[in-house]
Image (cartoon, rainbow, N blue to C red; front, side, top):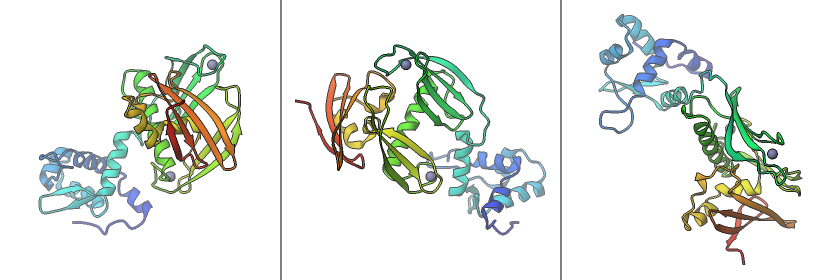
Amino acid sequence: MTDDPPATPSERFASLAHETRLAIVRELGGPAEDGDGYVTVPFSALQDRVGVEDNGRFAYHLGKLRGTFVERTEEGYHLTRPGIDIYQAILAGAYSVREDLGPFDTDFSCLGDDCEGTLRCEYADDRFRLWCGGCEEVLVHYVLVAGCFGEDLPANLLETASKRIKRDMLSLHQGYCPYCAGSVEFRALGPTRSFRWSESTDVFRHDCTRCHWWMRTRASRAALVLPRVVAAFASEGVDLFEWPHWDARVDREEVVLSRDPLKINVRIRVEGVTRDVVLGPELEVESIEVPA
Ligand SMILES: [Zn+2]
Ligand SMILES: [Zn+2]
């Protein structure tokens, strides 16, 4: 038995709203026996796994998912693409409530020229925050979905935040929202006070035109994820993705070469490897050179 597939988003969400249906999605999210993709499970085996004894009741709940989140084939039931999305969102903790963590002291020190404070971090209200315990400057404040970091704290939290921020930065810079697949608008906001350097440096902003996710960055931070820059350092044996951008050992210096068109030289020094990266008005790489 099956109902007509729900047509509208609200009907689709409503069709998920039962613990048995979410249990079905979780069961069908398991790995296929041949290791290739997700399981396909016959009706009665699925019913056993979910643990509902009443055939009619189980068929009713399964029917609610069919046509949208679950599909039937000759071998049994499996997740559709939207079903996989829901399964992944459950795993990522998108619908979970995560308790606040921290604040913790970290092994990192402040990036400010005149401050020797220790960086502190916390996870509160679904946001990762990193700030200096000395001068109180906030370095990072960013939404992280719950459930995506481990128990070794604060190391796992810092690692997850760094990876997530780099991934989002790269995706947004490529014009593709990592959350809704919308297109991204890029703007130069002009020189803005920088606590790290005595002079102001240019700030840029990426905005998703669809879901309004956004991120602000400076040229010296964006440069660390640009593929040409990453490749240049990789060829010297340095993996920039291993380094969080708040690590003072990733030394960076910005110099504006011209205002119109905007051209910024970012000198990056990591593990003894130094490169001058010239970025154009859209933060595109114009050249990468070994400093003279
Ligand atoms: Zn400080
Ligand atoms: Zn978006």
